[in-house]
Length: 141
Image 1: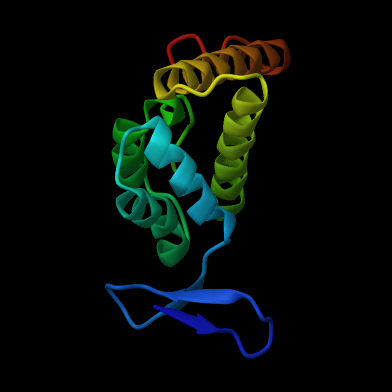
Image 2 (image 1 turned 90 degrees about the horizontal axis):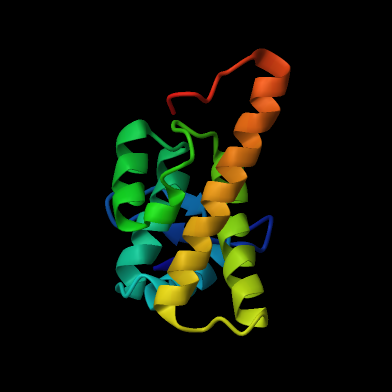
């Protein structure tokens, strides 16, 4: 179910498990559509999974483990995450998928492989930066 915010004009989504209205960014639905193709999953199930942190106002370690099991390219991230970091993570995944589409990569397996490569490369880069600044912090992560 959806309700309109009186003062902002943004769509609010009613949590099926509570009576609480929550602002879920509209791109979460788009990402769920893309990921349903890439991860061979149900669009509504993925939307519920991706939108859950907006209802809980954060990304817990338990939730992140569930998300990582369903979408393994997210696993290199660290939990818990603030909502802003989670939103940035989702937008980054969306942009990575769009970049792969733009380069002609359209098969789900190839997109999943491209996402896995990107997160591995980004994590290695982050560790190099941390090592330069703080010593060998990523050695066993």
